[in-house]
Length: 316
Image (cartoon, rainbow, N blue to C red; front, side, top):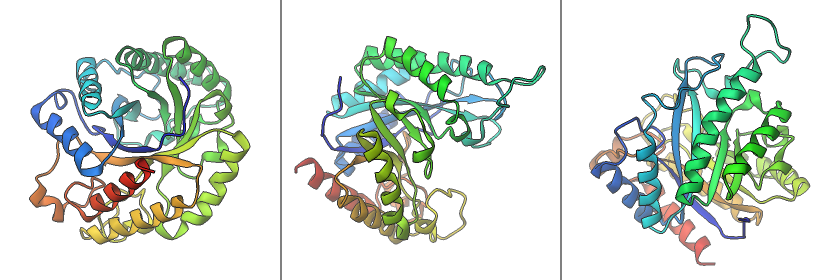
């Protein structure tokens, strides 16, 4: 399956979900609202498995709190019933709270120390498990990794993993590199699509798009932002990747970010869309939207901006 010029007007769904929180009436309503409120034509169904620390080498994706396979298949089926195309996005996180970008090991094997080979062995099993589900359920796209910055330099291991995934999954493959890392990945040629996290300061989009464009042109591959978004919180438009930033709730701040991002990307025909971050399986009540300061756009000013932009792109 190739990647055509269809615009990806997408939203990421379900990321913070734990086992038992999907395949519920509340989760069903959440997906329906995501589709209707944002005008999306795609969704990234995002789930996470936990390794203990950034230096652990086992990813026990079959254990709680990871959502069950039944729940994953349910979410894909529900999304497809809403005429959404689906990218399945399994993510590895650290149970101790360390950000996954810090998963790292010595480049040279040392006895009695955890090794890249051990981690990639476990990670490959994890990814192949969900690649098979993506194939079985007809997901149009599969994301093989998310913001694993310290792993990006392990080109040989990633190329081997991609070759294994292609044996079980026939759709579009991408890797979600982290912000500012687009030019650090040396194995984009092995994938179908380049994607990255678009958490750039509202006033810096032009410079960052110039930088990313050189990567996209040199690789001659399609590109979209597999993540992009901003908390509705004072100060967040200047540092949208900092979810711990202290500030008062502000819908205007989130709107400012989306307007800057869409305005910048509108002039770049090589930006083929977004999987905006994010939309949880369990939504806050709409009357609490004013006080909600997270990334979700439900009930906020940004939702209208997103719907208008997505609708204009889909109908072009």
